[in-house]
Length: 278
Image 1: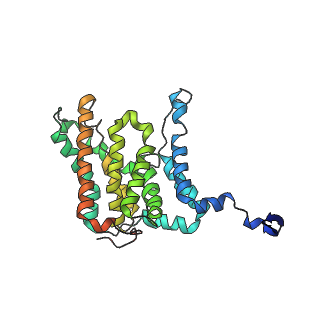
Image 2: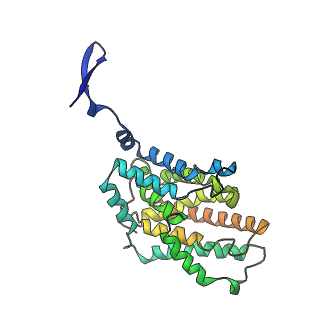
Image 3: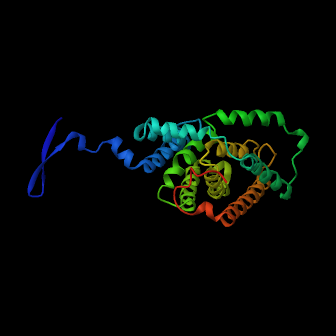
């Protein structure tokens, strides 16, 4: 073992090479910071190139969040970290009503907003329902799409570590701000209201994740149900699309407020991720 002598006040003391802080040691001590920085870099790297017509493909890489989580786990935690994430990915034994919540609520919000929207209603008979079913299944296994690219990262990796020292509500607010900012390259598609909605709905995601004992599977289903029928599929454009986005934002704000107000126990105290579902 090599060592060297350094000056430390009036005395000399030897320092071994094992005591020198390295990259892996720094990552272990700053897992969340490393994860969020990598998530932004890996998702955003093509954005400036796309803006200046240097890179003609996509301006946003959703898989960056998943890659960031896997990199930090590999460097800082190894097999125990991968086993923990893997168990969360297949955690399916939760009460049936959480499945109803995850699969049903996003569709209820979307189609209820359609009824409230004063624009022309979609022609329901013209919608490709079989294609929607296929899209739902594909999005579950496609790491380039939002559900699988984001949920193992934001919820499976970030939430348990945020809640080690913070309350679930504070963790949800912090995560909501960061995830909303992470989506900024998509503002041309979603509008600013879509970015704000991302913040609000993060509170719902964190509640569902915690109440299902830290199940990534349930939030993955929730994310998938939220987006597999798009507003474009329903034929919304222009002012009708903007109105639909505002209605959905209002609806998710009400849902988040109800979850905070009616289930206060879910938001108190740190580290509630692995508690039994209720």
